[in-house]
Length: 365
Image (cartoon, rainbow, N blue to C red; front, side, top):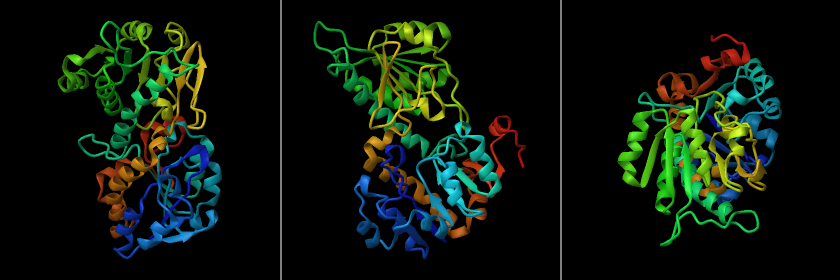
């Protein structure tokens, strides 16, 4: 089987799906790995590194599409990339199809593409092998980002996340107690911030409480609690996920208006459309903007900022599933894997996610 690792340069993307060692695991089983020249450069993996592990370097963007049975992408499939795909191809990527255009969905259907969204791959116990590790990384980045803009001159307010005797720490409000929220809370607590976590899932709040004890305040996320917490927040983090669909916009513009001047808002839900009326996607090269007096950080591919760590972590997890597909074939590999079945957006062009039926008006199967 032929696997193609694409060089993603759009949107300041620096990550790569498979490291040289990941490529080696496929090559030693008798499969071919094509790597588009420069695909790993931004993560510190040169073309020669891939060659040393048995991969083949392709210098044409169009050619790698044409020669691969399975395409390995980071960024979502677009109309432009669809034009290069061949009928019946299989694609692994972070798609977030719920916010893709109808034209993309139509193209996937017409070309009978099997599209596996790495962000929705899920085990029977609810564990998401790829999204969870990406979420852990993203959560750990939250205090680095927040601290930078909260104290940054001339934009920030000159506030430290932690404290010294006689000075109160920054107040951090996290909405969403899943993997991102928990990871962020742990990181903020480690820097001495005053952390409040809100969620409607009491079990998740209990887990955070058991993990961090009295260092974090947990609150049930009703509208009143959210509105009250936002008013005292120096940092607001939204980490809300609705699997495979758009994130509900819980934060209104009027609520943002009540926040402190130059507070920092990090919207980790921007991949699925954003949790606030004021959220809009930004790039790593220009990650922030000010709206209603609040500094917004809304970068969809946030872990691209730590591209080498992210690429290694992703490759470590993804390799297992690629090997399953390589050994059994795409259809049987998916049939034999609950995780891959849950990751299917389309199977040979057929919509496999009921949540998208209304969005695109296409019946399941």
